[in-house]
Length: 83
Figure 1 (cartoon, rainbow, N blue to C red):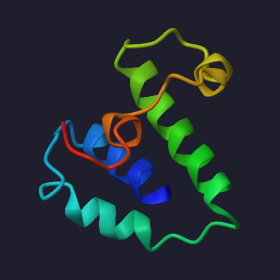
Figure 2 (cartoon, rainbow, N blue to C red; figure 1 turned 180 degrees about the vertical axis):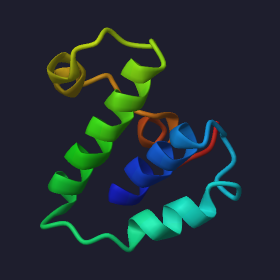
Figure 3 (cartoon, rainbow, N blue to C red; figure 1 turned 60 degrees about the vertical axis):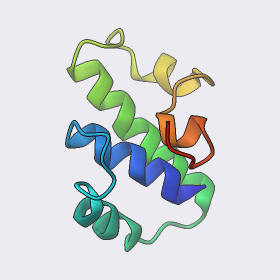
């Protein structure tokens, strides 16, 4: 779901696992319009990849990161259920 990708992006960007702390980012991103949920997912996955690469958590290769079906945040991985 798009909102799960948004939550993971915002929490990663702010370096927190607290959705309440990230709520203003989540609300702002949720208001963005995309042509489809698929386009939104790709947008947020690309942003998450960029953050991971910048933090040296992944190799500097955006294409491989985007192609990695296992690369996702915990909210997406857990279907929106907290850890």
